[in-house]
Length: 222
Length: 222
DNA sequence: GCAAATATAATAGTAATACTAGCATTTATG
DNA sequence: CATAAATGCTAGTATTACTATTATATTTGC
Image (cartoon, rainbow over all chains, first blue to last red; front, top):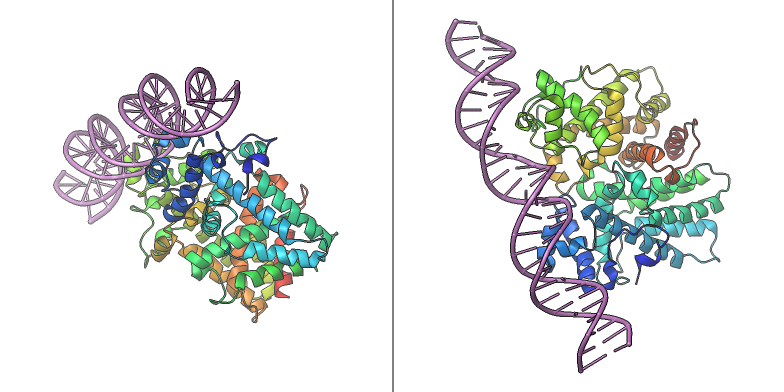
């Protein structure tokens, strides 16, 4: 199981009370993921979440200051999960190119095996991240939130992948720009494919997004 | 001056009353752009906008159903403006490659000459678009909004640029994916550069984003 | 196994947001 | 200058986004 609390000890905590350590906390996380997926972040409220899990909203406020902070927590959790997934998938035996191919596959491929976290459906979580995670970042006080370390797990993934990019091509000038372009671009294209298909390319069944981004990365680094 | 009303006649209107045709409407547009820039979209309200322009909020509701619809309007306006800018910048004399280079320049370069719309500062508008336009799209009912034609101007830019992409390389499989990746990627990198510089690459002064995306496009199409 | 500490529930409240309605007044247009 | 249209004013509602207090469960430490 992934414990967020262990990973950001030096930073301020995203939560007020660790939700993974109690039954109510786990219900909050589990239900919020599926409710944000169903309602969208704007229509999601702590009141609705409370009535879903049978607890008053002030109990939820003991875990998270507000719903945005809860979203930031889910985003941090997701990227910790991705970081672990990448870490497990890579071996020192692989060539840098093989590593990068594997990483792109992880970033592009929809999640299927949903069992690493007991009370959250990772498939649904990844759908929420695709649709909503941008709202954790694209805010007026993002710099302040960042200074508190709230995006550290995301940054660690960016760092880790950037390092592999540098292994592939040590002279490449913009590794982080490449990595964040792929991560956010994949989200956007997957959102478009699911919701505004007229704004994206590629037929059903073909792995257009994967093919596009593999090509993007390896041509850029060639 | 750009009149949105002329461009989407076949679609449902984004507004309830055309804001360009009255003084109050123009004050609403002008003040909302600068207020969203200063406050961020979440903290921006019709109440605050009303007290800024000296009108009650219900007068604003006569122009726009809600603040999200106003954002959609600003986004539509911006893309109409970009569409015109691209249209004016291209000439049939140019080669497809020259056209595409010009388009990328327009999409990447921050706006400076701010005089095509009298009551809106395009520099501020483009900052708002970079930070907030994703919130016009990344919503639960985006398909419904799209079916009403609210994103038509954006789609027209995507179409127009995709056509130039096809002129450059008729065999390329994913023109729209390339175009939307560039458009949204540029926004994201510019947001990161301004707010979370640790997540992007490139030194001050150098046109890193432009160089990155020019390279991306022309290597992809090579 | 019990006391103390902690977590949760229940109730009650506030300020702000996101609207809507009705009517009086001002401003534009033919 | 009459009529229509737009705006302002006042008043209201439901919901959101919280906070506070106290009572009741539930853990935990001894």
